[in-house]
Length: 372
Image 1: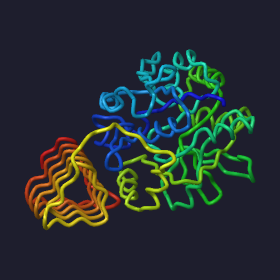
Image 2 (image 1 turned 120 degrees about the vertical axis):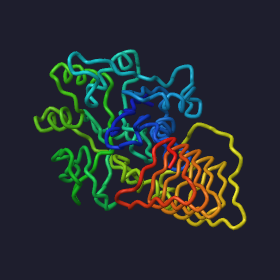
Image 3 (image 1 turned 30 degrees about the vertical axis):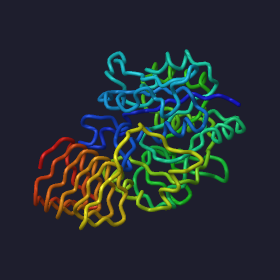
Image 4 (image 1 turned 180 degrees about the vertical axis):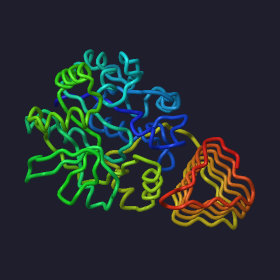
């Protein structure tokens, strides 16, 4: 079996997440009641037999380091593997890296000191349950320079722009477009790529020396148009949630209330791992009302909760109402408060009888540790 290493970009899309990434990376952003976004890609790599992963950081990655700790939950604390944080450094006169190519330049030493033949690159904002070993087999069989993992995003009705969209002519890629909304004949790249490690090293060093910084635009699209890059497309038919901005993050959290979506991501055959926390069960007081929710451990529910994602240790007091919202760990919703269409970050205190109502296309955000 051919061996792979993994590289995860932890800060991609930070700028589009507003205050949610003010003090954390996209990778460490809480998602789905008890997970962080990076849990999904790391679990995919672990379940695919990858034992060595480099995480490229940029800033605000202390919470990410705290979450991953010894990396035992993902089985990366093995003798021949491991989880490696790759910090940023200044690139000549350009400052800290601007795109994935420059970010990968930070990982040159990691790549050079690895012996695995192949490498899988992945964003941390794509939520799915993919088998990278199947994609590697497809890559090797194709004999192409790069394999791009993609799905038919048009069928999902998703109307957001995608970093890289591939148009297919039969089984062959005929066009690579950047930052467009996929059409019915297009495949949308999932921010996941496979190539030979030595080949990746060459393109990174060559690209950065020519002032190129973006993987999708400056390398994949440009090289494909020039006829210098052959692309293999690995079609993924499972559930894909792209958390590329505040609205998609909010809506995709709530999509987990759909049992079919949950089954597509949380599979018994390929578990999603996270940091283990021993919590007491949630307690539902007499008179409380809970409908169509995901509620994590350690919560105390006295009020009304509907169509919401509730993280650990949340307290919703008597008479409080929470609807269509994402409530993160350690938050207190006081008596008589009403929260609708909101993202409430960790350790927020909502005062009694406060009314906070957003919209599905523009949810209210309460910042971490806020008192309102």
